[in-house]
Length: 197
Image (cartoon, rainbow, N blue to C red; front, side, top):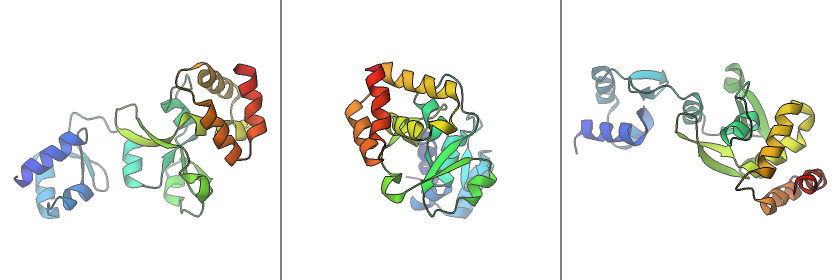
């Protein structure tokens, strides 16, 4: 397979995105890649990330490609799970405790630190608003985090998310309670479970 065919397949597989790191893994040299990008008029959206001219930049996907530690959480995760009726005001991400998130804070992101033992708990993949798969906490982890931080959340957003989860399809109450026990907020979570179920 020619280098050009390899790059075309990579772009097709990644919804119009071309990532330098993956191209190099496939044996494409950086000089050839630079030539291909120029000849095909690909747009650079971040270091090592290019898109075709028919693709709208997906800030969530680009952010995760650039920062592998990022997991979308808070209002951003609630929105991606359709548990909020309005778009998030600020992108919210979680990273493990001890992670240097200065570059994320410089981009005006809301950064939450998760203890390393809980950081990966409840991670799943969902499509972003542009259809690219991104890492996000699942609904149950989002609800636990929401209840644990209810004093830092707008009342309307809190109420909407709880109701959408409790009355929505696909809720997994056993998983919700399991997470609540691990996070030591079982009593608080059970108050909401008992009201709505």
